[in-house]
Image (cartoon, rainbow, N blue to C red):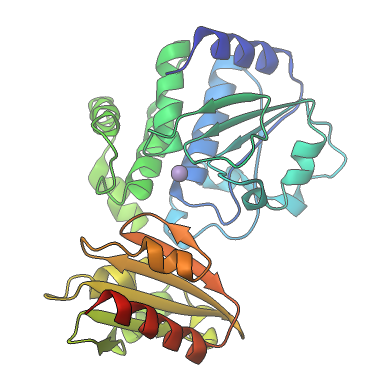
Length: 320
Ligand SMILES: [Mn+2]
C-alpha cells in the first residue's frame, strides 16, 4: 500500500531535483531494466525532467528489444563528477547487489528505494517497498495509479516485460494482484505475444550451448536427479543464468530435482537448483546460498568435481 505521505515526499524531492539517477541491481534482469526505464519515462512525462539510467554487469541479450533499452548506460560511462540530487534504486535486495552505481548513491542528497525483496538494511531515505509484490514493476504501476501520473504504451510495455520476466510468465505470481495489473496493461494496449517474441532473442552460440549442456546431463538416484554442467568455456557463451537448461530438463517425466553447475571461474561454481514440487532451498543453504522453496542456488568456491560430489551427497540424504 503506497501512502499519501510517500507520494508527497517523492513529489517534493523529484520536483526540486536538478539531477536524478536511476539504477537496479547488478546484472539487471527484466524487472530491474523494465522498472528503471519505466520510471525514467514516467519522471520525464510527469515532471519534465531528464534522468540518467545506469547499470553494472551485463544486460542479457533477451532484453535487446525492450523499449528505451539504449537509455541504460554502463555506470563507468557516466561522468563521475555529476551532482546527484536524487538517486532511485530498484529491485536491489541487498546493498552488495547494487554494484558500481553505489558510488552515485553515496553522493546523492536523497535516495529513494523501490523494492520487493527482503532488504538487510535500507539504503533509501524514502522506501517504497512491498514484499508481497511479484515484481518492482507492480509497485511502479501502483505508484502510477496512486500519484495519478500520466503514462503511455511505452511505460506499460516496460512494466509488462518486467512482470513477465520476474514471474516466469506468471508462474511465480504470489497473489492475484499481479494478474490484475497485467489485465489493466493488456486493456491499455500491451501486446503480450509481441513481448514474448521480443524476449526470445539470444545469440546462436547461447542456444547451442544450452542444448548441448541439457543433452549431456547425467541422471542419478533412479533418474530422480539430473545434474547438468556448464564448464568455464561454455559459460562464456551463456546469456543469463542458464534458465533454458533447467526448463528443458524440468520437462522430463519422473524427474524430481535438477542441479545446474556453472563454472563461472576456475574454483567458483554457480549452482542453480530446482525441485518439481520438492523443496531444494535447504540444499542451497547447505551450500552457503539460499533462495525459494523450489528454486534456489549458491556460489561455491571449489572445483567442479568437488561441488558435484557434494551435491550428490546432499541429494542422497533427500532421495531415499
Ligand atoms: Mn524483481
